[in-house]
Image (tube, rainbow, N blue to C red; front, top):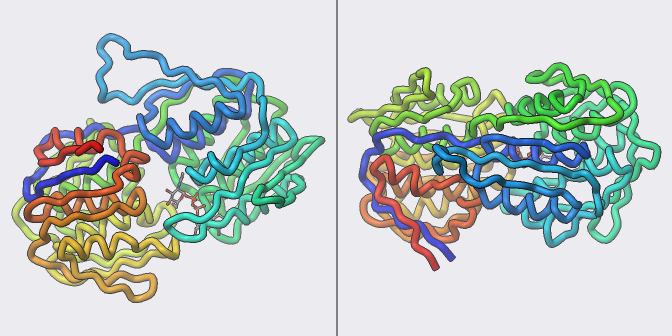
Amino acid sequence: MDRIRIVGGRPLKGSIPISGAKNATLPLMIASLLTDQTLILDNVPRLADVSLLQRILSNHGVDMMVPGKRPGESQQNGHTIHIVASRIVDTTAPYDLVSKMRASFWVIAPLVARMGEAKVSMPGGCAIGTRPVDLLIMALEKLGAKIEIDGGYVIARAKDGLKGGEIKFPKVTVSGTHTALMAAVLARGTTVIENAAQEPEIGDVADCLNKMGARISGIGTSRLIIEGVTRLGGARHSVLPDRIETGTYAMAVAMTGGDVLLEGARPELLQSALDVLAQTGTEVSATNEGIRIKRNGAGISPVDVTTDPFPGFPTDLQAQLMALMTMAKGTSRITETIFENRFMHVQELARLGARIALDGQTAVVTGVDKLRGAPVMATDLRASVGLVIGALAAEGETMVNRVYHLDRGFERLEDKLGACGAAIERVSG
Ligand code: UD1
């Protein structure tokens, strides 16, 4: 199993190209199931989760073509994939595939919308909380699907097609909104989704669906209105930049000090996180090329932050912010409101010398003058990159174990940080 070795204490300087967003790429790939025409996606990140979803979709009969490198293209560019689901050969998504990646459960919506049936394994437990699918099922039922749960599978049927309806989410859910949207585009009549998630990745998927011929309005708001159409066609769409990757590297620069341009990053995708960084004493400026992050000399100021659905502070940056706060000049409080068990990084950060006390859903972080390198273990995707941020500032060597979590969501992390002066390397085996 690969590990990542980091020797901390070097400021980051240079530029980091921001990849296409993982959390938009996955539902965009799943949306290909809605049409028999070709969907071309540009700026797709090279990630383990993307390859895994490719395998899952191929089980349904989806063909995917990844063209070779073109002259002038560097490893820096995201790649282009051509996806075509001309014939769905299987409407079942089996346990051994769905259990590896929760988002693959979302295939249920396009499969039932296009084929009138889908049988998808329940995703099962997950390291960051129970993460149920009740609201996804509720959304499908509102559009006329008959749902049965049998042997760990959710079976959705709509023999005569789905019908538009009103879906009102009792809580904001990204997975629920993606599901409702992908089901509604091919339903007969109008669907209104109230209290929809407003995460930018939802808007990106909705834009792509409209290019495919869907009729979605209210994009970017909490009320989406969808006029169903009988079929969708092909389209070409470029994945928006990854706001979580952007925020992660921004926090890394704040942690080590230095001056880095995050190329291609868009400030409006993570304004709340950039505001928090500014409060810590980090300089944040928008440029024509992206976002520039700078911190020199002065200490890190503590902040009090609560995670919230977009446009609030993202839960996917909570672990990274906590790592930054471990060296703040004072005490900060970080409250997690989205997932009930998303503090597993606390005990690993403590191994680096962090002082963090948990009080229910709030972590109280007392800044220390220095962290010291230690062997640590990655527990989930975002937690593991929080450990990398801690390690970049820690004295001596940190070995991050179980880095497959990082490979799921961060493209070429060690190359990107290494190019900015970090002492970081992958140790194979
Ligand atoms: C997505 C993101 C993930 C991010 C999260 C919150 C992808 C691939 N993943 O996850 O990175 O951390 O949004 O921004 O885009 N819930 C229910 N019932 C349901 C569905 C959800 O109670 O049927 C709850 C969840 O347990 C959680 C909350 O709603 O407490 C939010 O979940 P949701 O927004 O759906 O997150 P995901 O789509 O799983």
